[in-house]
Image (cartoon, rainbow, N blue to C red; front, top):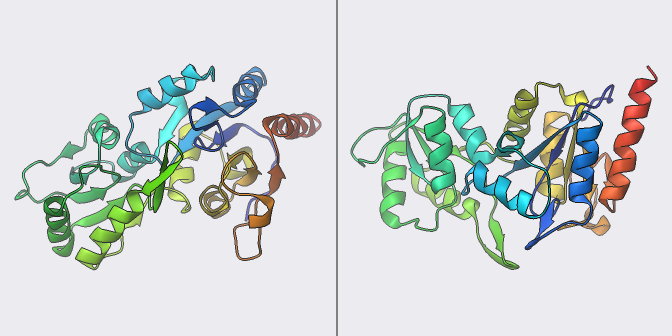
Length: 269
């Protein structure tokens, strides 16, 4: 459960379906970010996607006219690298994960005969049986098994394709071991987001379009949440068996008003 908000310091924004949809900005996203900056609030874009480097994500947002610096991006790949901390890994993934690991000083093992400290599994369009066999062999031998996220499907140009979760499932089945999952709907990604902006759960607001992942992760971390009806989930999806959002809003205009109310309330203390 989220804690009562005392003073808002940061807003965590999901990307696909929340800030942009397809190849365009969700209406009002850029204006909202600019408004937050003017009010002294930190906006952190927090995404389960792990295949693209933060610089690429940042360039995409800027292309939509959304203010963004590299440090405003937190991908599940970056969070995974911070979570692991050090050592060496055998990686199933793409350049976004590889860059994140190397930036933290974590060595990526290339030789399949070299025992790594951890096996990290993420989205990989070049996933193969050979990679599966290496990963399962080391995990079965006691090496730590970490996954950036477990999203079963990935939306690409309005087509749903198998996501990271499909690859994670193969490694889980082949090794018989459950992974440590960093991304939403677990709490680890948002816990690292809180560390990044140096605030407590009751000082943050998480905004996303998908009940299962975005709202689930916020609830797990004790952060107040907004289900923004700009993407996947609808009001009809808010059922008792699903994670319950703190707020349900239609647009960034409504979200701006909510944030302003938080600021006015805290100024009154």
